[in-house]
Image (cartoon, rainbow, N blue to C red; front, side):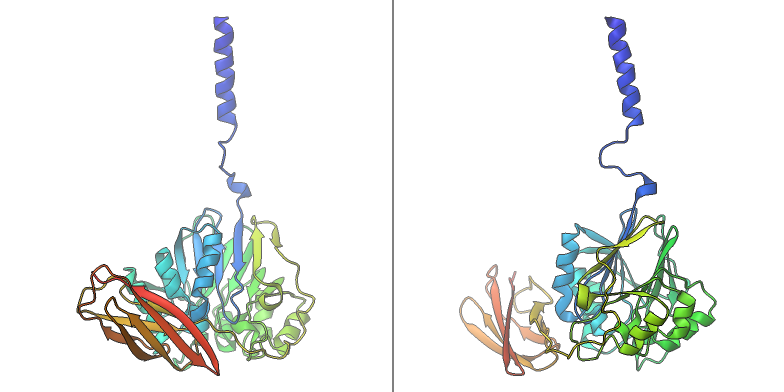
Length: 383
């Protein structure tokens, strides 16, 4: 009997060593996921690398930050290893300050070009608040991911600061035999420079530049990239006419299968390094010009730069979400209400005086744009 028990123990130990522990995945079967998030007219791309790293490329417009955060939380993201701001345009970096406030971010990359817009300043301030320094995104810089090649192939050089599109950080991501090229808003000049630099730009999936504008995705670029699939991140019924019939027909002439966020919602690509699949089929309307533009929708948002200020200090109220205009802000102090008027997208400095410590001061904000009234709320608690 004793010998039988010993034999059973040996067999059990062998089984334990041979059978993988629950929850582990063989490296050969790990997948890379790329989510082209539907945030309307703009870009926001979430990448889940095979070894678990979370990468975010852009964050959509100012009013889309909360949507991006909600999407990432739905994907069980708890922190972000790498954030990439492709260039200073608001429809790419507008929501990144909100993302920086919601998640711990380890590294931030951006091209070495600045902008005077409030949106860009908000992004820089958010990076600074998190104690981070921006690393330069430029040709040859590698992200150093595990098991995946992620290298910037652009910008190749400096461009005019009057139009920052060609400054776009262009990332090539390769896992096994499959690759992706994320182009931001890079236009034909930047495309030509990337081609001239003799880099390997070949990719299975191309994120179409500048939402399908005619100034991007040149025939010369398509000839070099040779994509099988193209993803266009674009707003439904946008006022720019994106994607243009010219670009759609160009893609068709190169037999590229097209996905569009305005027609299909969020596009998710999955690859194990050999096989590549998507959550939806390529659109049959890929070569159809966009429908008549519809009125854009807006969402008013507000925040203060210090949620727990000292008495007699100054806080800054920032209201976003509308293209322009003014707003009324009512500060509900414990003893009285105080009304201020501010300008959309510009910080409003408010001296809080001897506001009651520990009492949460609610701020009701109201703004009117093109005859429609928008409302939002924020707060702070003096200490």
